[in-house]
Length: 241
Image (cartoon, rainbow, N blue to C red; front, side):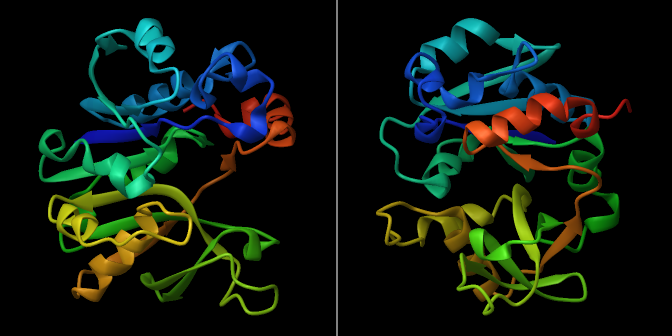
C-alpha cells in the first residue's frame, strides 16, 4: 500500500525554530520528525510515499532525495495553504486502490500504522480512522461512534457538549473513491478544504468508516511544549518493535 504524508505546514506555533525550517523537519533528539514518521510507516509495510510539501520544501527534498530506506518518494507541492483535503488531492493519481494518510506532525509507533496498513481484516471497510482517548476532547475533532463505526466528527465542541473523549488522531486509510468526496468538499470557516469535511461527505454517501484504537502514545506536535514532551518521551512514542 502507498502512503500520503502531509508535510506542507509552516508551524507558526513552533517559532522561532520554524523560521528556518518547515514544521515536519523540526528535530526530536537529533532526527527530523518526518524522518521518524517515515521510518515507522515503512516499517509497517508502506511501499511508496507521497510527500505533500510547501513551506521551505527544498529543505525536505534536499534531505531525503528520491528515496528513503529503499522506498520511493514522490513530491507534490501545495503552493498555497488550502487545507488537508486539498493536500491529499494532489496525490490522487499516485496512491492506488487503497492508501494511508498521515500528518507530518503526529508521532506514534509502527504498530499503529500497521493497524491501518494490514488490510485483510478490513476488505469490507471503506475508510479507517486512528482514534485516541484524551482528557480534553473539546480541543480536538471528537468522534461520535457506534461500536466500531464512526457516525460523525465534531470539531472542537464546547466543553461539556462533546459526545465522548475519543478523538481523531490524524492518521487514516481510504479507498480510491474517497477522492470524489474530496472534490465535493466546500471551503471551511478557515477558508480551507478540510479532510474532516471530506470524511463527512464520504460517510454521507453511505460509505463504511470505522475507527481503530491507538496503542500506546500518540502525540501531535503543535507547539513548543509538545516538542519538549516529545523529546522526553521518544522511547515511549517509538517502542522497539
